[in-house]
Image (cartoon, rainbow over all chains, first blue to last red; front, top):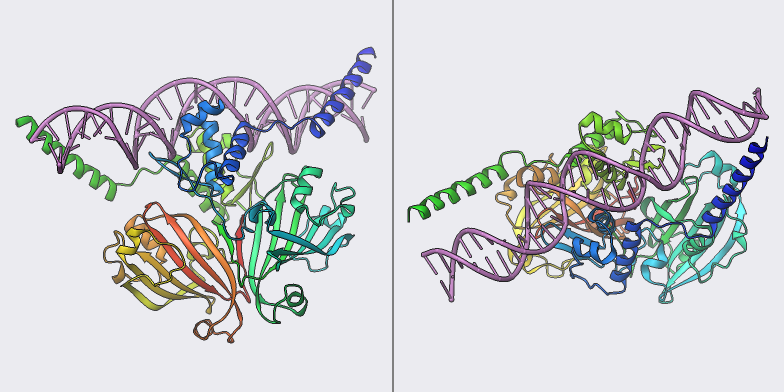
Length: 260
Length: 260
DNA sequence: ATTCTTTACTTGTAAATACAAGTTAAATAA
DNA sequence: TTATTTAACTTGTATTTACAAGTAAAGAAT
């Protein structure tokens, strides 16, 4: 009996520990991930310039105290995301990607274009509602039951409206999200900072469609003018949670840029 | 003197050996690559069905006589290309992607859609010419000097014209390519089988534009109807050689599908 | 001086090993 | 029976070691 109580107490404290360590203490980031973030930042900050050679794998090992497989894992992620191009016998060449609108990159619009130029205007504030009847993607039962958080935004690039963005998020573990400010902060940043949700990838369908009257009004276009229509489904670190966007984009002046 | 002659003869045979082994004998394919191709084929052939679990990493090790790092390298490529989704503690789930037109995938249109449905019609046969004055991408000096091979094709999906594809290839080490048959075989397959050129990735710009009269005629659309315009630059295993495409796409019935 | 070879350095592939961490189902306790 | 724990899986991270293969520059032979 005594043992059981002790066990219970232990279990109790153990779960407290788990809870605390998952919520407050920094989740231990893998080494290769840390190196990936460091190098990516250096590339974006122009510490390593276009066409530059990155330090060799062995040098990176020494610099950051890792072994070669770990370093290679970081480099392979960078190569996958298009930040470097590897050449056997030569080295890793910095590629310094999207000067154009990189909406196809994984981090969402804001981080790709750079916060300075991009302004956001809320058309419909986040509201909790039922999913639309003929939603563009198939939903899980859990998503269907949870309802969705809906919002509409228009994004301006140098004061010209470029994106009309309709977002849907399943209402799973997102307390008080409808009362947050979305004007200036990126949706993705709020999700990451306040809810520990990271977008990991996803799929999309792309079409070319004529602007409806609503779209032409919001994006200041002539009616029937061609706009790009993207339907995106984004996967997150929470395997049950997906983000959905229907984006209409004026590509007259800017193109959508991406790697494959 | 005798030694030198002997050396010369040795060198001669050595280069012959290199030549032969690189041209005829199967280039040794890495094990992880072999496994990648096998699993990919099985997924595409529905041996492993959607939502199925792949054999575990340890089982694959035994099945194919490899070690876990090698197997993991293959699986990580598959995950990167969207054929599986890995879940820690669970396994690798088959994702079975593009039911729609997977032109955004790396292997080119034909392999993604499946050869059976896709037909190709040559509009302009491959010709050697100078690069256009205002080409859509910046060219290297070598490319500029080599001139380009130009061709135009229209691709039909279930007998409906969907793609109008303008291709440019730098004329670097591609003997007799203009005299080949492109009607049925994929351009990518010819490049791979006859010239050992593999497309490894690339970048693209996407726009929504109104159909010009030429495009509307070729794709059987109304004039000014919105079409998708892709400008692609594809990197190959030859670091000096790039393939370029300007693709106009009717997305009324089909969407362009991709992962990110 | 020029050409060729060697050498040193780069990334690529592969094995063997160890432990961490997430998932699932069987075994165990109440 | 029901709830909990345990054990047996799964993938994730990391080290160590070895050699293959491509690149480029220093060095040697002509």
